[in-house]
Image 1 (cartoon, one colour):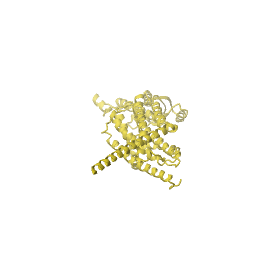
Image 2 (cartoon, one colour):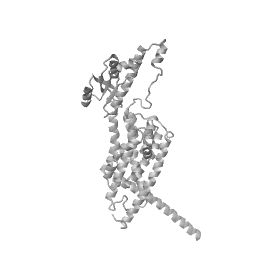
Image 3 (cartoon, rainbow, N blue to C red):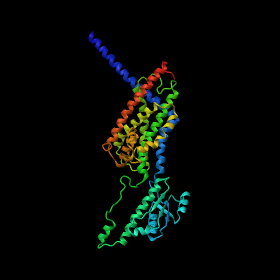
Image 4 (tube, rainbow, N blue to C red):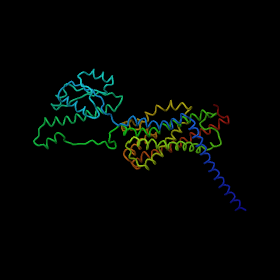
Length: 417
């Protein structure tokens, strides 16, 4: 009899466990289905989840697809009017990046041409330009550029430097004598060098900044979209809490995992589009290993998702994310260390940046995509993303747990408002 009762007890426990597991999967599936239903019924969220990450990469890629500026209009203000200054101007004009549209001796005329957009910069050569060079002194030339586009400044500066180096070599060859041709060559060019743009053969802007922008779009669109969904939940729920009272919202883990799974499955497609398809369409440098990219993107997506879900717990309505979070895009991009050297960023901003998945995501993906780095080479960023995933999951779990308890209290009338 005792053996029989023990067997019946074990069967009841096994049945209860199977029922509990089955109910868990059912609840997760229901939360996943309900979240997808809400996503595809909300036009604003569709814009943030699909139109933004699918459209922005194309817009940025079209704008910067040419990589470099050609024939940037430059005015030369030549106060010297000597053979050396004219030869220097001719060599700048011979550069493929710059076109000298006018040579004048009046700086005001050059400023007017900039105001009329007939030129985007002007170069001033002083009256002592050639004399200083013949005397062996350092000659000076002042460059003024329209900084509405940094590519103009880059084109003018590189053309000016290249022209000055070649002109100095020719002047040294004609003015300095040596006992042998070999000594003459050593004097003119003591340390021969060749500039090689590693991993960016065109030395272009798109190959430098666009990989960071592509993965950053995933970060920001997730935060904005999930936050707007959180505000929508509060507005539609009669209790104005993030988690409504229903049979399938009995477990906090089920709610968090079901929602996260809905976002993750959508952003698998978004990530493939942004990080694989767009670079292939516009022939940007892409040296990534497929397995490394997949393994790296998994913690990046989950870290972004759980951060977005945690932020959504504090969003009072659906309009708030656009007001509170849009302005953070430039801040997050700058402190990630891609457009400004991370070594030059103050320590407190650097510490704050490592709380964001965008920072290790950008730094790791740029190395994987541009230099062909493997997972071992980005182990610091990879491990940090997993730490952020665990950290934000715990925060999200307790934040949602609080929302569940708050919903029950409001339903029972223990909490007002």
